[in-house]
Amino acid sequence: MPTTKTSLRQQLLLWLLLPQLVYCLAGAVLFFTVTLFYANRVIDTRLVETAESLARLSQTHHADIQRLAPMVVQQTDHRFYAISQQSGNVLHGSPDFKNTAAPYLAEINSRAEPLLFDAVLNAKQFRIAALRATTANAEPILIQVAFDLDQRNRYAKQILISTALPLALLIIITCLLVWWGIGRGLRPLAQLQSLMELRKAQDLSPLSLQDAPRELQGLSSALNHLLSGTEESINRQRRFIADAAHQLRTPLAGLKSQTELAMRESSPEGLRERLNMVHTSATRSIHLVNQLLTLARSEPGSQTGIPKVQMDLAKIIRDLTAELVPRALAARIDLGCDCFVPTAMMHGNSALLREMFINLVENAIKYIPRDGSITVRLTEDAHNYIVDVEDNGLGIPDEDKARVFERFYRREQTGNGCGLGMSIVKEIVERHAGTVELLDAQPHGLIVHVVLPKTELPA
Image (cartoon, rainbow, N blue to C red; front, side, top):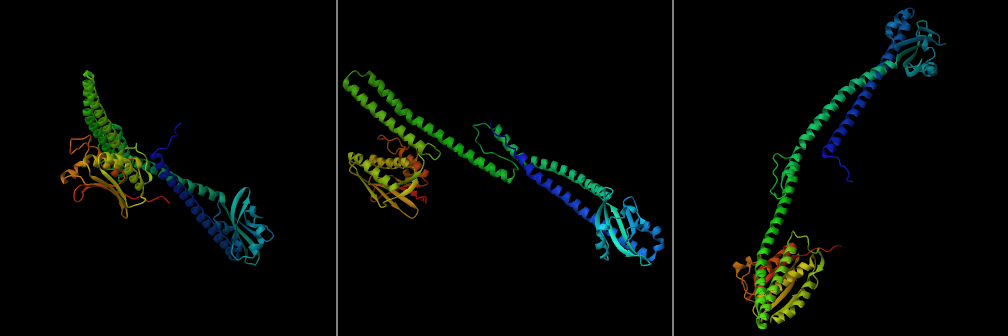
């Protein structure tokens, strides 16, 4: 079963909202921690100030301390105090704090300032400031001022709630804004999807997106480039099919007429002559079909060719020249090969390159006068291998050199050619990122000049 993938909208929401949620929660925790820290600091400061005030009051107004102490402490349901003797007897204040400072007496007696500590009394947690002091008659006493931390915790909860509610509202507003922004940002993608869904398969015209962002313009340009290449490939195939149909129609019609005439012949001599003509027509048709198949395979958009591999161009040229020598001798042509490069390794399609050189040599054999000569020459420069197929024929006028590479163009209507040989050569050379041109030979003749780039061998 195909796996369900999350949408781009969901991914954007996740990566945009998740960090913001983390930041908001972290901010709330930090704000609560800092607030609690300063609240504890305020409580400790007030406790110390109150304990010191009670110590001064004990020294100056000892007789009135029972009346004045509650006012100094501002005793409420969460503020308490106790003034005790060294024996632990509580003289004034809450008797519940009789023994709370017992574990800390040694430290309290050694300090001049109040000691702050936490204590649990009656299942409640208190923050206590304890101070050793003396009365007006030099009697040592222990002063304790306590604050009920349950009240602080209630304050902390209120602070947390008052902080969390605005943050929750902020998160909700942020989610809505991000959702709206992502939807608006992805709207051009929806437009592109709509354009593609409504477009017919035959419509390969460029896409037009108005006010599209830069990233989508890049995608649109890539799609337009793909559509343009596809349209060019389809048009090339259509032209090829039209040209092939046009070129095949004539020889096949002639072949059919020859067979009909042969069927009417009654004499053996006439029948043999008609059959010879049928054989000639069939040979031309086979040659045309082979050339068309080679042309289709050599086109840059074709995927049916043999993959490119490392190969020796010099060996291919030497072997092909040797194979074509018997045919050249039969046509009274002197065919030779000059390989000035012993080994020419390159990355290419050996089958197509063989077909290219066969076309070049066969064209020369076909169109130069008898007793002529053809030389296949291989040289190199810093970046390229150069192949020249030179003959001493009549050559080609400059105005016709460019047209020679057009499909089905024939300068002469004689012979069995179909006008595809040089088109095949051009397609194969271009498929190997090379160039081909026609040059004049001296004193007369033609040079087909092919340049093929070298390729680095793998380490």
